[in-house]
Image 1 (tube, rainbow, N blue to C red):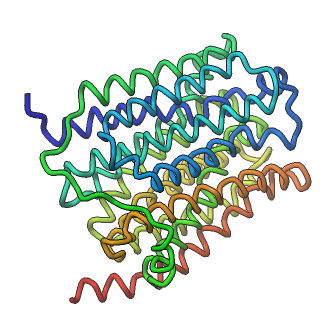
Image 2 (cartoon, rainbow, N blue to C red; image 1 turned 30 degrees about the vertical axis):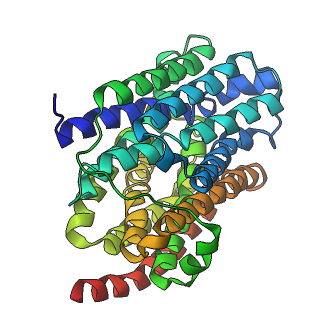
Length: 391
């Protein structure tokens, strides 16, 4: 039976939702893993930071070898989701920080064949007005990333292994959904080839680099916030912090993705990113001062932050796609994603270090620097957007 584009988007988004539950599966039960593995304060950030490190490595290897263009995309998604489920489930048997962090790295590497591949499969169904479609896909990613916190809340009186096991099962289901219930779009795109020799062209393309700088500021903030906000809320005194983490990161974030996708098509990509990053920067600068003072205000700021921090995520790669030439588009997108995820390793560790030495009041403050610099870049990009529209 021929599939509609909305059917493909719905099933594909469910697959992304299930598979991305692997990303923070260990972070959601970090207290239990600390006891089991004997994690030090220096080890803890790497339980989360190893995943984007693996993702960046996996994305780069995939691009260099042309894996996403040599193999059918849906089958690649299936294999990657199954590999991620395997690496995640092996955490049940890990008993040392090095083994656990290595498995987190391998999980991230597997997810490099999940999210980017799903975006490739699903956006081909929407050759025009992709804003809403991409917003829905990233909303599914956001919900999936926050899902382990919901699983932790639902299995609060159950062994931590329940969260790991459930997220692995969901990733297996995502593989089945993508291969059985999602069809390829009627028209396929052209291969996006990566070449180290093309990086010079990327660096010399001013609007592409401005979009990259905006993305780097966005990524500096995003995954560090997703990593540490749940612990901040728990230590700040919020009851049911795991469930509320799912609400503020997952539900509010998904709403922000859809809203951002709709607004981007109407007001322009650069303007939408400026609005979103401005809002998230204010939240980053202020939320620390709600710690142990006002639980209601903490929840309000966290929800606004969760919504705004991800609302612009799709627009940076879309801007690169608009301004990069076809012969180095694949290189430009890989460069953007790899550097962006590598930056998250620094910010995740930095927040942990500041929290230990200066307290939660100042821990998130440093994250606001990223969107502020991103705003400056995207403001300059608006001039290029206007020139492109007038041509």
